[in-house]
Length: 265
Image (cartoon, rainbow, N blue to C red; front, side):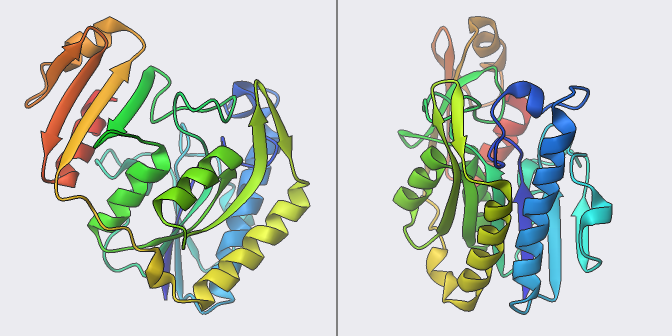
């Protein structure tokens, strides 16, 4: 069994403010350590269930947040950004049996987290086929492009509710709930134990039921907070400016959606 893990930080236990997510700030180190611990727990859960390979993508900001020395020796870690359209799931292909998302967060405009956003803070919202899209949905579709099911997601309560609406078979763990500019979190040690336990239980089950079917066509709308961004990006091939602050793009190839995101977000 070969397992892929994509890890972000805004959905890690306790993380509440932007200063806790950014290198160079005094608050960052403690939460980067918790990010490492939660990823490690997922790795251990996968390994103890029979995984022979575990590949981790550090997928937050600089992508150099996870302490490789704290991960088990059987783990491969991709740090930094390769620069390909798969982005937060770079390195994921059809050779993997399942994917796990750790520390993910609510979408832009949701109001479910003080750190809610999608891809970039310059974006007001992204819709795919009329549905507001989170980074979970964008990356779950990327996994589906290669026939890989996302079987477990940890993060804030708003995100895990969305995951369940997309596919109720996907296992989730809400490590915290956003209320205004605050969060209410479980104890960090409990989240570590729960992640490991749920990952083990999920990988022992028929996780193929977690597979998401890709739509046949994709109608994408990206709204920016500043009109200048929408105007500039409207010159990308196939993109139309639909309001002063939003653009649209349509295709029947999801990889082309990822390519568009790669250059315009």
